[in-house]
Image (cartoon, rainbow, N blue to C red):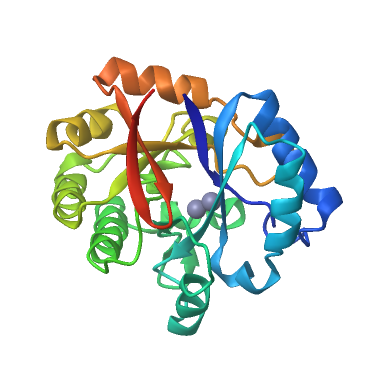
Length: 254
Ligand SMILES: [Zn+2]
Ligand SMILES: [Zn+2]
């Protein structure tokens, strides 16, 4: 079973969720054989979501089950934005992510030189401490692109990544939430999925559930490399994946 729980039908804000726009997302999901299409638009775009268009498009592709969610950014979103998104009816799941250190949008290609100006250990510390606090909020079901800070391949801090990631995995376990295998990292300079196999193996040791996401911002990216994510998960030992309905986790074999 293949699912994609990380699809942005509003892109970075360039789309409007018209029926003509959302149909290709479902068409690609169907082509890729996805059982679930999880819509995870950015929280600040929540007022632009057109659920009726998503549901209408879904009727043309009944083999795909629509799941409604949002991607929160716990390093940026205002309380009002979070409350607005989380109060929308029919929400199936919520992803929690960190894209900012202070006002630095560290995953922006335009700002990647900032990595050279900063101490890498400090950057890792700042990033993972934000993810850690995010996991303790209890606001979301899935940790988004857990080790995103690696995307421009800045190298590794001398103390190792697990020095920072391990406490986060403990917090994830305690919070009872899941981690996505996000395939979009394959198309970034680091050229690997989030999280790394090393971190994923520790997730497995902790018994942390996983799900899959492409982080598609266009229809053609829907379901991209989810079969590779499944291969990685199987290699690590996983046999089950987390799906979501009305904020309840449902575990299935894949
Ligand atoms: Zn993200
Ligand atoms: Zn995303």
